[in-house]
Image (spheres, rainbow, N blue to C red):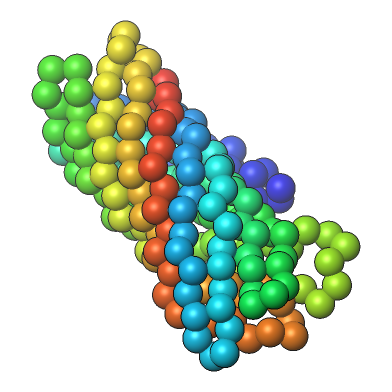
Length: 189
């Protein structure tokens, strides 16, 4: 959870770059992480489908363009042939997004990157942690329900290399695409 301690510091830096017409919001979303199996190097790797949460700090500096900092966590259990590793995945990242308001709705598209930290649960011998760069893409819709509060519907895709969590078995060394449909809420200040 040391990655979660970094989020308030990043949020402070993020908010210090405010301009006169800017809008900033904080959001929390719940998502499902869905990744298909892959094979290579004599290994079949099967990531489990899990739920997770995403924390976002988003800054819109003009009506169309903005950026965000985010942190997410989900279970990232991996199956290698007949062995499995229980693990968690922490992601920290930054994205650029384009949005445009239509009445109480604000559709958006985003792209960015970050790092995925795969960490096996304690007590599992023969495992190791991995850090992988990740490319993030997606889109969604912000719906302002009342002033300063709304709902966020979004889809994110993460593209990264398969983690190598089990020392005795080689990873597939292939690219994975994790689909993350999300539902959340934001507070604009």
